[in-house]
Image 1 (cartoon, rainbow, N blue to C red):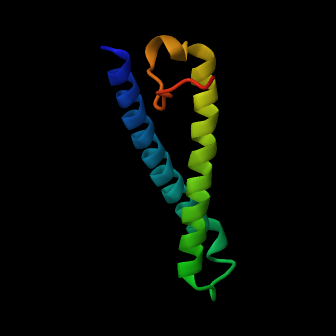
Image 2: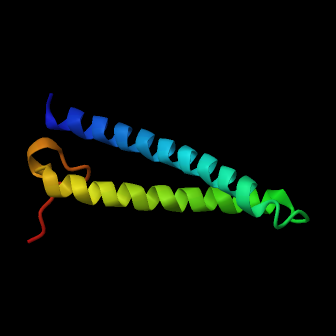
Length: 93
C-alpha cells in the first residue's frame, strides 16, 4: 500500500474509533446516571441530562483520541507511512 491509501485508511479508522468511543461513553454515562444520580434527582427533566451526557461523551472521546494519537505518533514514523493531507503548491520566496 502507498502513503495515500495509508492516510485514507487511518482517517477512516480514526473516525470509526471516535464514533465507537463516543457511543460507549454515552452508554456508560447514561448507565451511571440511571444508577447513581436518578434516585437522588427524581424531579429533573431528563432531556437536559441527555444533552449533557452527549456533550460529555464527545469530550471524553476527544481526550481519549488525543491521548492515543500522541502515543501513536511517539511510536510510528508518520512521514514514512502517511502522506500529508494539505500540501503547498507554491513555495514562498
